[in-house]
Length: 344
Image (cartoon, rainbow, N blue to C red; front, side, top):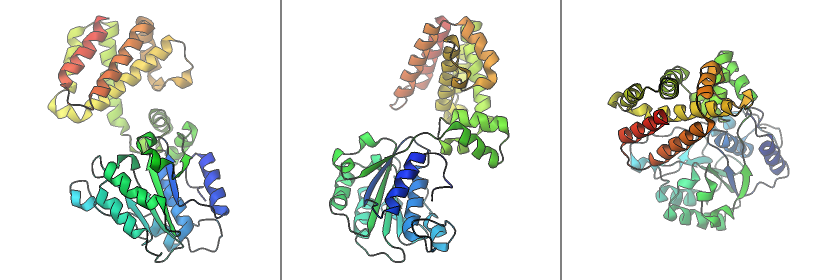
């Protein structure tokens, strides 16, 4: 069980022990960074109650029940009413609640409450996964509390969150927590290579994803390299050439309407490059450098910039990234940020 999933051996050991001893709590909270496999672990746990093979305490992953348990057909995020329900997989005893935009709707939690009281149709239990559980508002949270306080004996609920502190304390206290960590870089490299990526691409994606398998699989490396080249040019113009006009031209480009979808990614890439240059200026180990495949260019920047200058610039980038959560003028923010770097 869980052999197909990457990393998080401690979580695997804990869940295997609970399943083997027949002591799986009715309410669980899977918490950890985005993209490390929390949902896949929850689906695998669901299969432990649905699997029809004759392997006690294990999951075959191949019988029709196992296959159907992991097959969800979720709607596109354009109709709010579509998200006022529990979405069942191909298996009638495995359901999930997912957010509509940034909120889990109270109607979906109320339907989960109703469904949780039904007896299993095919499996040994009913199993529900609440994705991004921290996106429940007060009404949804209070509705869920009713079920968590007196969970039906044959029902299991797994809450998934990358921000567990945003959940009500009363909800956290009623769940047994299983913590997930970033997946080791070497495991991600091997997984990506097995899925057809060249070794250099697999290594770059593994460094960029910071332990998130989901991120590694979704990265468009061609697009990333294009943005990285542009942002590297910004650092070179600002720190080496002191060309404020060129810096402002780049700011104009990243704020162009046709590039608006890439703005946040551009700022993220710029921060990654500045951080790597700062680490190089501090003589950090090569393993700490994300963009080590362009270490020559970054070394030149590190040699020309003071570490304090880079540290201050990284802090300024963070301020911009935080302010993106509210309605700011991106053009003014990026002009001010890049001019600050070139003027330092």
